[in-house]
Image (cartoon, rainbow, N blue to C red; front, side, top):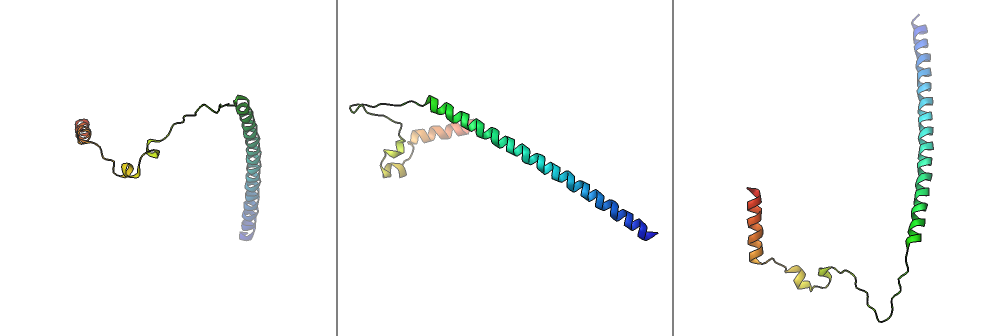
Length: 105
């Protein structure tokens, strides 16, 4: 009697595990399909965006006599000593300290 009960439990456990595996496989397949759809949508959006950017792109013509000004960092044009030895003026330091004390109160 015990062996029959153990056999029945073993068979039920096997079927339960098989059902869970089949369910898990279907979840993986659904996930793969959704991932492929997202990938194709992303590629399409990327292609659309690239096409829009190419359409907006302008050609710039610069004559030989003109100059082009571009923003430059202040530290790029400063000497090395000015970069390393920079120190705020005493008045500015005292003002900053007073503001910190005032904001703490």
